[in-house]
Amino acid sequence: MLIGTGNKALSIHLSTDIAMKDSLFQDTFEEARKQKGIGQMNDQDDPIVMVLRHKDVRKCAFNWKGFKSEAKPGRIVVPSEVNIRDTRQIPFEIDPPNHTAYRKVLESWFKRPLQEEYKNSLSAIISELLDEQLKQEATEVISELSLPLQSKALTLLLNTSMEEAETWISWGVHVFRSEATALDKDKANILYDYIEKEIDRAIEKPGKDLYSVLLNTELEGRKLSREEVKGILVLTFAGGRDTVINFLTNSLSYFAEKPKMLDWLRKDPSIIGKATEELVRYFSPLTHIGRVSTSDTAVCGHEVKSDSRISLCWASANRDETVFENPNEVILDRKVNPHVAFGFSHHKCLGATHARQIMKEFLRILPRKVSKIEILEAEENIEEWGDFKRKVGFEKLNVKLYSQQG
Amino acid sequence: MAVINFITQEGEKISVEGTSGSIMELATSVGIAGLDGDCGGVCSCATCHVYVNETYRKIVGEAEKIEKEMLEFDELAKENSRLSCQIEISEKLDGIELIVARE
Ligand code: HEM
Ligand code: FES
Image (cartoon, rainbow over all chains, first blue to last red; front, side, top):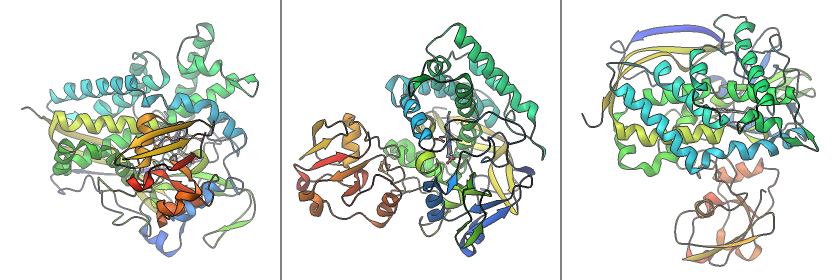
């Protein structure tokens, strides 16, 4: 998942050109959602009907018998990865009842971020990174804050040594992404080779890390196979990289342009939980994910043929005006917020506890340490899905962080 | 103050005293199995799903539209289902029994 993003169209501007616009993430799906409820796009000759309304997205996600995930490996990802990988990502590309069995053995591990010790370690990582950047004249948020934070936090989830993060940081932001239309197999291989090596290491010298734990995990009376362990780990790496990086970077751009909201968090940290949900709704770091139809059917009155693809467009559902009041506004303490940013139903994000905990700690520490954030330069990252162009994050975000004390 | 009784899928009964906030918050503060409250109470995760015992259903009241729609897509939903993050603790609820829907 998430090895590719759409074709890139870049727009570059200096922050002096347009005031207060960097943290604006427009809803590109509005018209199509209101008028037709679906969008259409082609992807490597395997076209996709994009499901845009909140109710339909949830209905299709719930209906795993009608819209399956267990297709050819790579097919439910957009753009499709069928030509670049054979490894099935687990539990992402598995349907119930097997999916339920995998989730059962994985869930307790992925709930570890709720432990006090885990939170404290996250908090130390965030504090250290912010302290370091507060000494600098300028910070490129993605490479100097979000990527290192995401990588270091991942060592907690995998329970590996913090030094591993240096390797993952050295891969850069674009490791699982391809800039050109064709997906780049070599780049994906960096990750696969790395994971193969780590599995070898864990077989030779088992420890308390996720590789070792998975190799020792029993599922219905047998141990998980090497291929299964690989499928789980690849997903853990790929699923939680760009998503977390965009979540952090975009949120920082928001607080740069809305300093009053940073003040609010400082005065009333009790809103942090709701703020986390609202920011993930607004930014929806994962735009959509595919499913394959198991019969000739219709979605929102539109024909969907058997064995063709639909996508569940979380980003569009999260701006549905029939569900969310003022959907295009960030309301940090939004009380009822049935967003689907982490997916919905069986396949809802397994890494959500980790991602939420990162954001909660970030929102707790940022306002304490930082008084003001000034955007110096921003370069948007625009995805293209057929006719839809969606800003999902930044290619580059240069800021100056001002210390709370000074 | 109200005593809230949780019954887990394992059949364990846990009684907790609460004064304010939501039932979900009370449950997560003591760590009731199967009641996780992943989304913190904004009605987006359904990990706070409970069944309300008959005598208390009227007192607790009906779910609002957004909550109902959430339960519509929960395969564990029954007639007496509620999302406990949407139920505020009050004295009226003293003695209520809530069966936690998830393991
Ligand atoms: C803000 C950050 C994140 C967002 C917005 C996000 C979003 C999503 C979404 C929408 C799905 C549903 C996919 C589907 O229905 O097919 C999903 C699934 C998944 N995510 Fe995340 N994710 C995030 C972070 C993470 C992290 C940090 C990890 C792990 C390190 C992770 C691991 C997974 C896994 C393993 C699944 C598959 C679950 C299953 O199929 O049962 N995600 N994510
Ligand atoms: S806590 Fe998420 S819906 Fe109740």
